[in-house]
Structure formats: C-alpha cells, structure tokens
Image (cartoon, rainbow over all chains, first blue to last red; front, side, top):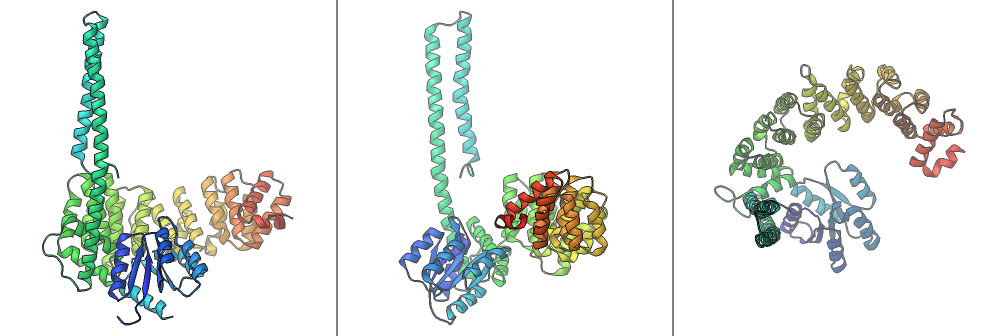
Length: 124
Length: 402
C-alpha cells in the first residue's frame, strides 16, 4: 500500500462499519484499535498513543463532535481526526471541520477512498 | 428483546397458563353456585378453593420460568448470531480483497445477513461485488420468492433484506409487491422499490423503472406520507420518479401533493417552474404543498408574485400560513408591507408565521417587528412581534424595540 504505518483509533458504533474499518486499515499495515462509543474511545485515548483517529459523529453515548472538541483541547492539532458521517449530514460535516477535523468520509464509503484519505491525513 | 422467536412455544405456554386459571375457576364458580342452592358441602368447597390457589401458583411459576428462560435463551441466541455474522463479514472482506475464497453452495442465513450489511456499508466497486455475490449464491432469488408468498412476517423480513440489497433485478418483484392487498406488504415494497430505484444508474432503465413505480404507487392508493417517503428514499432517482408521478394522466391529489413536497424537501430546483404552476391549483392541499415547496426552493418568478399575494388573504388558514412563509421571496418592500398586515391576522398561526418570516428578512425585518411592537394598533400583532423577537433574537429585543 505504501505510506507510513500508523496506530489508528476508530470510534464507531456500527459493528459492520467497525469490522470494515479494522480490516481495511489492518490490511494496509496499520495497527488498529476500535471502540464502539465515546466512553470506550476516551479510555483508549487515555491509555494509548495514536497517530490518527477515525470518529463517527452519531454515537450511542453522545455526540462525536463533543469528543472532537475535547481531543483538540487536550491533544492540540498533532493527531489528525477523520470524521465519519452518514449521507445528508452536511451540517455535521461543516461543524466537524470547524472544530478541527482534518477530513471526512461519508457512509457508505469505499475502502480505497478511505485509505487514500487516511494516507493524506497522515502525510500532513 | 421480547418475543422475536418461538411463536409455538409462546402459544403452548399461553394455553397451559389460561387452562390452569380457567378450569379451576370454572369449578370454583360451579361449586359456589351449588352451595348457594344447598347442593355442595364446605369440605368440597375448601378442596376446590385450595386447588384453584395451587393451580394459580403453578401458572405463575410456569409463566415466570418461561419469561426468564426466553430472555436467557434469546440473549444467548442473539450473541451467537452476532458473532457468526461478524465472522462472516470478516470472511467476505477477505473474499473481496482476494485473500480468501468464496464459499460454495447455498449460503447460511448469517452469511447472507453479513453480505447485506456490507452492501449497506460499502460504496463503489466493492459494493457492486457484494451484489454479485448475493446474486451468484442464489440469495436474491430466495429472498424474492419469500417476499412474494407466505406469512407476513417472513415476507416483510425478505422485503427489508431486498431493500438493503438494492439489486436492480429485484425491482419488478418489489413493484409487484406494491399492489399487494396486504397494506403492510404494499408499503414495505414501495419503500424497498424506491431504495432499489436509487441504485439504478442507467438513465433509460431508471426512467422506465420510475414510470413503473409511479404507476404502482398511484394504483395502490398509498397514503400521502408514504408516497412522500418513497420520493425521498429514491435519492438521486427522485427527479425521475417525481417527473413520472406528475406526468401521469390525472394522478391522485395526494400523489401530486407528495411529489411537490418531495421537490421542496430535496431542493430540486429543476422543477421550480412546475411547482409555480401548482400555486393556482383548484385543490387547496396541492396549493399549500406548492407554497411550501416555493418557500423551500427559494424561487418565485415575478409572474407568480400576485398568486402568493392573493394567497396571503385566502379564506383557508393553512394557505395563509404557507403564503406568509413564501412571502419572503417577494420584493423586500412588498414583503415587509404584506407581512406587517398578516401580523394582525385572525389566526394565531398566521400571525406567528408572518412574524417568523420577518425575522428571516434580516435587519429590515427585525426593524419592522420593532416598529410593530412600538406602534401597531392591534394588541395581538404587538404581542406576536415581541414574542418572535424574544424567541429568535433575545439579545437584540431591547435594541430593536427601543
């Protein structure tokens, strides 16, 4: 696949999307941790060091935008964040980018496109 | 999750519990009645009473045991099913990237579920390959067969699965389902057909499919809300479907309303001129839908200004409400003057719509509301203007009102 190998945290509640993210990123050589919600994501963020975060905005235990705000407050802009949103969620995408997300992917998504966006974020 | 499985067991338990209650109570009633006419002694009554209490206790124990066992078994079943589905998703992903081979023969239900979940999650060539796998393994044919016959629940599950699969070859089956006499099946089929239509990319095929769905939806006399939902679910094909719905010979009023509302919701500017035509429709509901759509599209040609101005004084309250919202598209001085007038309308809803629209007109609208609060002769107009300012721009109320 090329590009550098990174430790990536994916926070996503849908198990199919989670499995696809895990498989796609792992097959590109990345180390992937997954969390099904904000609380699980916070725990992993507190315990580990990640090069990049993939963040769903609609999570069962809260709004991903709140977590994004906290990530930018606590970690600054060093860790790129790629936001995952559903179709027709332009407002959420705009809000996410305003809060410091580096890029976004709309679901359903294409794995090659996801990898390209991840590579671009990691290359910045 | 309560009662997704085990209809037969549930029916058996229900029958036993009812019998345990009904039979002893019947005996008890008979014995009490006999005692009243002197035909039964106290010892027999006590025995039957004891028996009735005992059987009630047995019924309660049986019911509680069933509920607890069901919860345990179904939770375990769900977990095992979930794990199997996840394992299949992982396997299908390996098949897609070429690191594993596809299974041979008929697929297990969880393998089909995993493919359907992937079809919903993936886009592009991977999604197309998932559709191919579903077709190649016969899953689509099986679902189509199940969707057409049998018990309602099984048919519904199959229709929902086809809706997730969104495979164009299933479209005729789904359109046939729209005509089903069972309205649950008809509605589910219409939704599934609309979602499938959204995935038909060839423009010629899409137009033909849209015409077929429009015919089916109109003939099935689906309610307005469902037709509107169908239009929205058609996503990129909505334009083609709306065109097919509107060009039909004498379509039902509710179909026309749904199509017009769909135009507004999806912001399909290509139909803007068409919507304007419906502003003068004889049907009041269609006129209201056209006014709503005009407001949402933000397009009102000069030739239609008079129609909106006339609608502001229509006899029907909800026409005046939607006209007040659309009045923001009139030239600014006209909009301010007519909306000012509507602040004194006899209907609270029209007054509120006029005040809300004035807020959307920016500084000019806010200044107008301020003038109304200070100097309008009608107390109701003053109240609604002040309320709108408090709701929308609470920090500016003082500055605007003075």
